[in-house]
Length: 136
Image (spheres, rainbow, N blue to C red):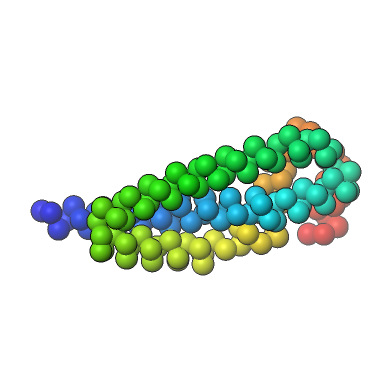
């Protein structure tokens, strides 16, 4: 019976690393790179005001870092408690997740969609739609 419970815990650890921890960490990295640059572009295009970006973006960055640290710590605890196989299953799944979801940190339609969701109440929708139609 202990072998079965170890197997299930390792499977849950791998799923948690792949579907939660990897995308969460990549999203936090994206907040400091791609999304910040896109927000600057939208300010230059007149879609949003700089004051709105200054008000919302740091909050998203802080939340992204805190959540990423918490989920990474949970993964680390789970991996260390079930070492050596936990380290293997969690580590391999995390690396696979980074490779699978690496588009999160690239400038693409996902960046545009996340921007729209963040600033939907304060942006100029006409200018935003024109920019998206022109560049995507």
